Amino acid sequence: MATREGALARAVSFFDDGGFKSLLSDLVAIPSTAQEEGREEDLQDYLHGAIQPWLERLGFTVALNPNPVEGFGPILTGIRIEDPSRPTVLLYGHGDTVRGLEDQWREGLEPWKLIEEGDRWYGRGTADNKGQHALNIAALEAVLKERDGKLGFNVKIVLEMAEERGSRGLREFVAAHAKDLAADVLIASDGPRVEPGIPTIATGTRGTFHFDLVLKLRPGGVHSGHWGGLTRDPAILLAHALTTMMDRNGKVLVRGILPPNLSNSVRAVLDGCPVGGGDGAATIDEGWGEPGLTSAEKIYGWNSLIVLAMISGRPENPVNAVAPDARAHCQIRYTVDSDPATFAKAIRDHLDANGFSEVAVENAGLRMPASRTDPDHPWVRWAQASMGKSLGKKVQIIPNSSGGLPGDVFVDHLHVPLVWVPHSYNGCKQHGPDEHLLIAPAREGILAFAGMWWDLGETGTP
Image 1: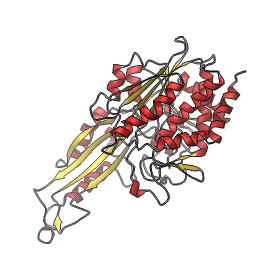
Image 2: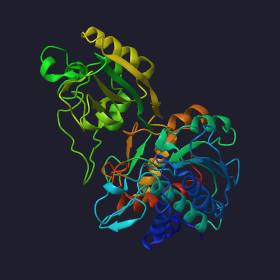
Image 3: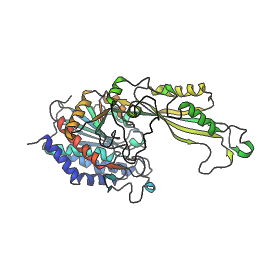
Image 4: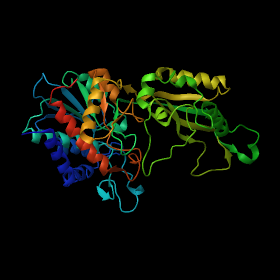
């Protein structure tokens, strides 16, 4: 007789016996980076050679679709309908990765080969996002085997190959295929847990808004001996402009780019929520950021301002000259409680009010919109209960993860609630060298999804 316990046992046996590691090794070996020229065939091969045969074996009707935006990676869809009267879940993931950065990995590691060391699997895509969506599909396969080829619900999958380039084309694709992709809920995985050992559900993601601050004072540099101390230095002036935007303790002073307040619902769900990156992560600097907020409230409920890059002159080859200009590329990570359409004006007004009218605000715009489902939504609480039953642990809900994902696309065009269940952690080094997936959270991930896939086939879904 098929049982929930049997489904979980199948899933964890596949993991413990080395089946999942072997599967992930094959996926990592495909150098499907979207950020390097000449990898177009690898992007296609990841979907056509690795994912499509797997999904077809599980009973999905699979299509490989060109990206609506020329020059960006293809999009796979998989549809498996058993009974239209039963719930339909949308599963999302991305098979593209950031650059391999081969020359930056430490000795003994390399990006396109899965290498196990201690409690972790190293390799590009292990955490972002090959390992995460592969865990979810492997759990689905375990439930299918336990139920003798049936699920008791319907599944649709969207797997894109341009997430690391801003998910270009995904919005247009989902809008054009909204009827085919209609679902009751999105349940998918990307990003980090709040701490490595704490199962987490995020109901949205922060968005990203970028802009340049540019100060151009003269056509070219002038001799530092003849003119230093007489003519204005753009680097110094731009640095002073930045200090009017954020104080030395990280408090954002451009209040127009912040939420009006932290809502009671966000405070409630984050009450007692821990924040920790695990080994290899950056430090949490107490006293940095918005005063009066906890660490969890700062990154899961508030906005942040970051200087991503800043330059004046040629740091790699300096000359004895007062530079002609200076530039800083800045980013705002924001929640749905703010309106990004007001950010550029708020920055402009702030600079003018502080005497920096000569500093231009250029290339201001939205890169990825924020999204959020109410943390008390029935599907969110259903997933929390299912995961808690499978893992025997408290499952932390956060209103949105600290990073960005294209959840807004699915909210806007499919009107689905968002249930993001991350399997990684903040210290996984996902966009740098030595990316890795912790084995213990991955094992919990396959158990959590096997339990949810089983429970979806039962009564009592929202």
